[in-house]
Image (cartoon, rainbow, N blue to C red; front, top):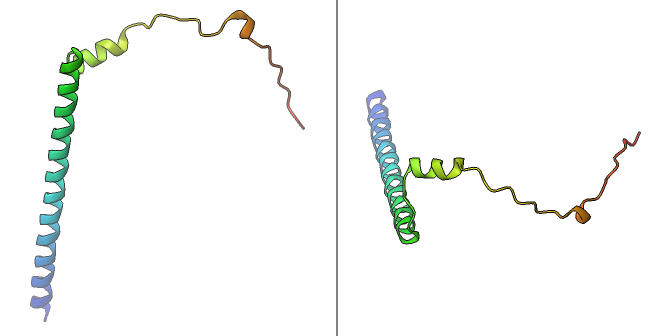
Length: 82
Protein backbone atom coordinates (compact mmCIF):
# COMPACT_ATOMS: atom_id res chain seq x y z
CA UNK A 1 0.00 0.00 0.00
CA UNK A 2 2.92 2.35 0.73
CA UNK A 3 4.24 1.91 -2.82
CA UNK A 4 0.80 2.71 -4.23
CA UNK A 5 0.64 5.95 -2.18
CA UNK A 6 4.10 6.96 -3.39
CA UNK A 7 3.07 6.37 -7.01
CA UNK A 8 -0.08 8.46 -6.54
CA UNK A 9 1.96 11.25 -4.86
CA UNK A 10 4.51 11.12 -7.66
CA UNK A 11 1.80 11.41 -10.32
CA UNK A 12 0.14 14.32 -8.48
CA UNK A 13 3.49 16.06 -8.08
CA UNK A 14 4.18 15.59 -11.80
CA UNK A 15 0.84 17.16 -12.75
CA UNK A 16 1.37 20.00 -10.29
CA UNK A 17 4.82 20.67 -11.78
CA UNK A 18 3.34 20.51 -15.28
CA UNK A 19 0.63 23.01 -14.27
CA UNK A 20 3.28 25.32 -12.76
CA UNK A 21 5.35 25.21 -15.94
CA UNK A 22 2.27 25.95 -18.04
CA UNK A 23 1.41 28.93 -15.81
CA UNK A 24 5.00 30.23 -16.09
CA UNK A 25 4.87 29.84 -19.88
CA UNK A 26 1.59 31.77 -20.06
CA UNK A 27 3.10 34.51 -17.87
CA UNK A 28 6.19 34.75 -20.09
CA UNK A 29 4.11 34.93 -23.26
CA UNK A 30 1.82 37.64 -21.83
CA UNK A 31 4.87 39.63 -20.67
CA UNK A 32 6.41 39.37 -24.14
CA UNK A 33 3.15 40.62 -25.70
CA UNK A 34 3.03 43.56 -23.24
CA UNK A 35 6.65 44.52 -23.99
CA UNK A 36 5.89 44.28 -27.71
CA UNK A 37 2.92 46.62 -27.34
CA UNK A 38 5.05 49.09 -25.37
CA UNK A 39 7.72 48.94 -28.08
CA UNK A 40 5.19 49.63 -30.85
CA UNK A 41 3.64 52.53 -28.91
CA UNK A 42 7.08 54.03 -28.27
CA UNK A 43 7.93 53.75 -31.98
CA UNK A 44 4.66 55.39 -33.00
CA UNK A 45 5.24 58.27 -30.56
CA UNK A 46 8.81 58.61 -31.81
CA UNK A 47 10.46 57.96 -28.47
CA UNK A 48 13.29 55.52 -27.88
CA UNK A 49 12.40 52.30 -26.12
CA UNK A 50 14.84 51.11 -23.52
CA UNK A 51 15.96 51.37 -19.94
CA UNK A 52 18.63 53.98 -20.62
CA UNK A 53 16.17 56.25 -22.43
CA UNK A 54 13.60 55.81 -19.68
CA UNK A 55 16.00 56.79 -16.90
CA UNK A 56 17.49 59.63 -18.92
CA UNK A 57 14.00 61.08 -19.34
CA UNK A 58 13.15 60.55 -15.66
CA UNK A 59 16.34 62.27 -14.43
CA UNK A 60 15.82 65.42 -16.45
CA UNK A 61 15.08 68.31 -14.12
CA UNK A 62 11.50 69.32 -14.64
CA UNK A 63 10.86 72.97 -15.25
CA UNK A 64 9.58 74.46 -12.01
CA UNK A 65 6.16 75.78 -12.69
CA UNK A 66 4.46 77.85 -10.06
CA UNK A 67 1.05 76.20 -9.89
CA UNK A 68 -0.25 78.53 -7.21
CA UNK A 69 -0.56 82.25 -7.52
CA UNK A 70 0.31 84.36 -4.52
CA UNK A 71 -3.32 85.25 -3.95
CA UNK A 72 -4.22 81.55 -3.77
CA UNK A 73 -1.97 80.88 -0.76
CA UNK A 74 -3.76 80.77 2.56
CA UNK A 75 -2.07 80.81 5.95
CA UNK A 76 -3.29 77.89 8.01
CA UNK A 77 -2.82 77.67 11.75
CA UNK A 78 -2.90 74.28 13.43
CA UNK A 79 -3.34 73.53 17.10
CA UNK A 80 -3.56 70.34 19.06
CA UNK A 81 -6.87 69.36 20.57
CA UNK A 82 -6.43 67.90 24.10
